[in-house]
Amino acid sequence: DQQVKQNSPSLSVQEGRISILNCDYTNSMFDYFLWYKKYPAEGPTFLISISSIKDKNEDGRFTVFLNKSAKHLSLHIVPSQPGDSAVYFCAAASGGNMLTFGGGTRLMVKP
Amino acid sequence: GAGVSQSPRYKVAKRGQDVALRCDPISGHVSPFWYQQALGQGPEFLTYFQNEAQLDKSGLPSDRFFAERPEGSVSTLKIQRTQQEDSAVYLCASSARTGHGYTFGSGTRLTVV
Image (cartoon, rainbow over the protein chains, first blue to last red):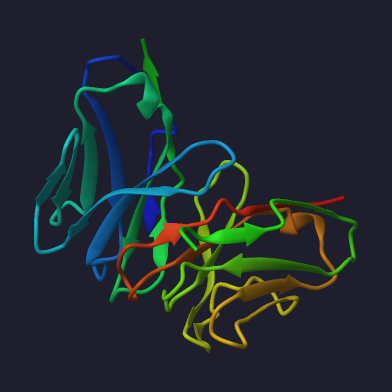
């Protein structure tokens, strides 16, 4: 039973445009959500997070939106850059312990 | 150290061989976590420690897997009698305090042949 799902395995975007990566979850006990970026042969790198008491968090070009009623979160990257090309994982936690990850979305930003 | 250090980076094991994977978390961090990432999938939780105590090992897939952290710093994930399905990248993450700021190491890619 996948508690965190990323339904798009890949996404291709033109440089300068917006990238929107989506994530759905089923466990209503999740109270903390994170996005990680992963390059080949490296570990995931933390990007941005959001607590369930908020519906938006912004950090530079990255914004995470949380819709608790729909159990949906999204990551917006504006403007997208070729260096953003990587696999993006959303993750969720309950009570501050282990993370449950989605399957990842490979983002390709074309110059 | 500045980051989470894992060794070896790559390990090839013959089926049935025992392996030990090492994680050196960030100095002062209290919670090393272990995750297993199969090809094309997201990381899956295995186990975690708070200081020397192993607080949750519910993700360990079989009794061939066990982890330890005897002196509260370096953690070791041991897999006995490796099987082909154990082939994956094993990631270690540490946190200054439980629930926030997880930093991952580069992982150990285990290939069982």
